[in-house]
Length: 333
Ligand code: KG4
Ligand code: ZN
Image (tube, rainbow, N blue to C red; front, side, top):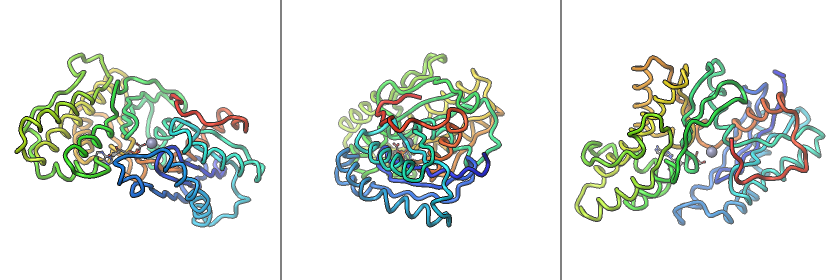
């Protein structure tokens, strides 16, 4: 109920996180320890290194979340942890810790779907959001348009058939030598460029019924263009590439809202931090008379508050997860 205190744990990719959330939406504490610097030298997440880093960081991160919440650990009523999708070794670190704590404290364990948790991050900042709504989830691993009809009831409207949007940002940034992670680097570089300088392809955008995405051809188009025009300004390339990505994301989110009659469009995932995407989505929503909701950057990227929140709803609807349940690297929504 409203006083239920959930400890959330997240270790599915490259953030080690723990949070204390009360009643499903009151974030009492939220600690995120990022591995970005550890992986930067490799230009991407190295699974084996990620698992080790989670193992080292997790206990201190959990301890800090409890201290910052100013509560005694006896006050914790349930432990929720991401059990998929994600890197198997990384997931197992969190799941093993969560089950041990649940066993030691004699409280329920709840395995949480990381994607479902992203959908819940918006509710942490605005519990008054109305159903049905469309969620555009854009991260380094996922690009999805989801209709959320109610708590626990959603429909996948479309997703990427190849690269995720964030992956495209990372790959193009690496190609342009702009650094890692690529999203923020391109976002910054694009500020000095002309988004209309180069017309890059907008894949799968001719058929209005198609809500899937494809970014791998765009990445190749950028590479081919730069190889053919070695003197092109990288700011113009960054700005034009970013415009092409944002254009398809916003066009399809808009269509998704129209076909579902959604009251609003919510952004989630790391790419939701992109300044052009935020601006263009709000502009489109204003035109269409639907609500555009942009959670803060810290809520969009991986965190454990969203895991605890989703865990709270799951516990209320389905009860605890069996302690024999493990990690599910390919879990779907
Ligand atoms: O959700 P997230 O933190 O981690 C997962 O992938 O689960 O998302 C990370 C992704 C990276 O690909 C990163 O380049 C991208 O989000 N990103 C951005 C921006 N900030 C982060 N992409 C575009 N513009 C940004 N400002
Ligand atoms: Zn995520």
